[in-house]
Each structure stands twice: as C-alpha cells, then as structure tokens.
Length: 116
Image (tube, rainbow, N blue to C red; front, top):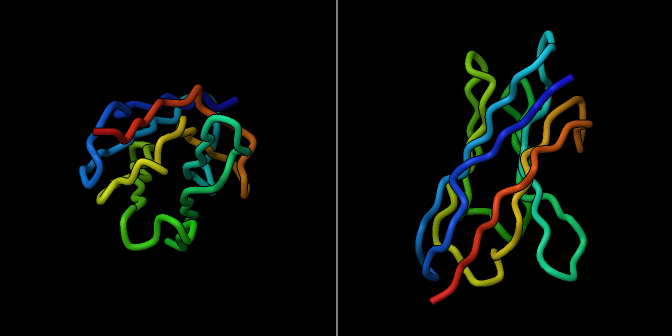
C-alpha cells in the first residue's frame, strides 16, 4: 500500500509560478511511475505530466514548455514546477503513482487557483 501526500497548492496570479510536491510512503519495493493529473470543475481528470524510472517524461500539450516534473528516487518524491500559469490551469491537482499510466495510487489532491 502506498500513501501519497501533496503540498504546495494555492492562489497565484496569471503569469506566476507555483511548485507542487508529493511524497510517497508505505510498504513498497519501488515505484515505477510518479506523476500529476488535474481536474477542473465540470471536467474529467486529465494528465498533466508523469515520469518513470529511466527518466522518460510525458507532458500534456497544454503544459509543455511551462511545467517541469522532477523526481527524487531516494526520497520517493515528485515535484511539479509550474511557470507562466494561466487561469485555465485552475484545478485540483492529484499526485499519482504506481505501474501506470495512470498508477493505482492517488493523493487527496491540492487546489491550484490562477486568478487576478
């Protein structure tokens, strides 16, 4: 069983930056995939970015060039650096982990609001 705890959400102005972090804990040998999904009001949950062992990374087209995912394998953490944020990035962001994509485990979500 894996528990995922996110942090770093909040309110930011358009054009601003925010960093989300997620820490995995529990009983596991290793986690192949860690990543982020988001869900805006009235919309389906969608991929933001993920990374797997070996370094492969995938980004949604809507965030390419603005968001960067990084992972610390020793600490079992994954971060999402979000730059040039837009109002349409407003959503609940969920950490995801497992074999994937998507992985079997989900965090509780953290709210990101981009508004002036």
